[in-house]
Length: 112
Length: 120
Image 1 (cartoon, rainbow over the protein chains, first blue to last red):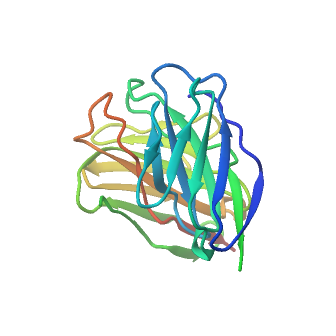
Image 2 (cartoon, rainbow over the protein chains, first blue to last red; image 1 turned 90 degrees about the horizontal axis):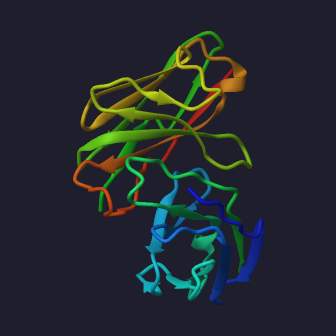
């Protein structure tokens, strides 16, 4: 899987929007962009994923650059429960039964 | 949604003993399960890939005789840490892929809530 680059940490005020960036300049044409998050002392949970078009779900939005070399996870109103490590991961669905490879992610702190 | 259950959620054992961790897919069948290990303040590191009915594939540097993986059914994989030592203390996490997922479907992976192992 291609490598992604994320800031080590970010901070947000409660109820403010949060934009978590991810660079993936070596992304291939078939790589999907996945976002997972890990709350303290828990396993990762799926947030959102996309290929080319922007995606929205009940948890977040994913904005994908036109050249697909970067993407941004958007939490529209951060809550204290959103404090977690957010991982941006590329995965090629045609690569067979491969695991997710986790980088260091971005640790999001939410201030009340 | 799909649920992966890990048991126990935490365990404390004495050095030299063995510990078994279970990973179950509750509402789907998983032909493949993945085992990760996570040390404090670090990211998840893949330990092994477990396929139902066959031997697990271990990542480089992971001792297969120390971390025994059994995937005897489509809903259960177990990781046994044998002769545990304090340096094996870590957070162990499993994840599973639904056997209905087809190549190209790119469905999310489902993760358990982890098992915190402390070896004294």
